[in-house]
Image (cartoon, rainbow, N blue to C red; front, side, top):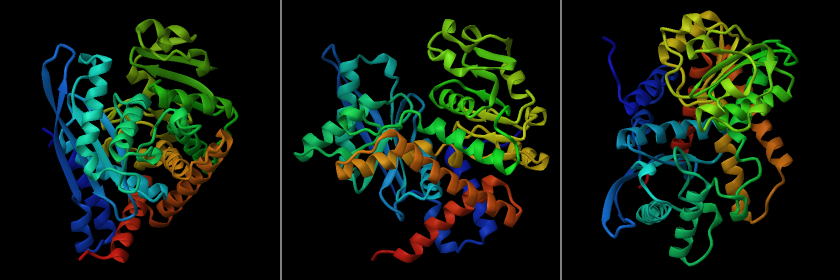
Length: 417
């Protein structure tokens, strides 16, 4: 039976693997293996019936050597300290690799939002943010949306912080509505980054995007925009899937024809788009030039990796590929663009939003998209070149770049006092 690891154990294993390859100084290794701060809070909420319920909440800051902590807040029943620690560590590497001046943070509340009314959700959000405010601020830690949180929750966060400090502070969170200092292009940024990465890889593999075949697993926000942008670039989308199943059409699908993304089975791509209905396993095994897993973690495993017939994998989801599957793909010569490189578009445009909010000066969508493409392509080129130079996988090369930058920042800053 395979040994099971917690999320934080897995994050540390990934770090240790590349730290060994880099021969990282043991002193810095000890610092970077653990979060610098973890705050546990008890969040009391007055319910609509007058009773009071309490919910466990967390905010973890893994590392701030490169700048303020950055990372989302998720609301889910399975949120726990171990998971939040792992996510904050992964955010450190994602921000470092993206080349933006942030460290990694993450937060969450153990709650089922479907059990709450809108007023209860607002009271929960405001109380949680007030509880963690001691370590939050536009120059300390900047939260963002994540699972089951959105622009409305960020608006409540921003307003709570502003009321507590006595002045409006746009830069305290990102992912806000446009009318409250949000950024143009933020909604589609993660999917756009997945598409930009895939197009960059096609160029390296000498694949003409015009007519290149693409399969996208997961048709939520990330998968939808990745498919739309690749379709606009001339790619032929031959396979799509959502929670309710998959669809295959060798002649190509127009993802924009399924704008209503599956909130129920009737809205599934299986019913909105023409083609043959297929299973998830069949979708992942379709022969194609590019596969974009944009659904859940651990979708590509050692069991199904041998059936994957693609040249490029651009990971839109977090952790869609297991370590064993990643090795199989590397052995097969499949170019895998790891999640924290391919799906960094969201945090990059969040950085743009933060910069705009600090200046109270906002850019149009074309400028946001242009700057995003410049950063994504630069980071992709650097990781690819290092992978070729060191004869290592793209994932290992991405970790190498990310860890090296944080280790150097830690070295230059020193240990205080």
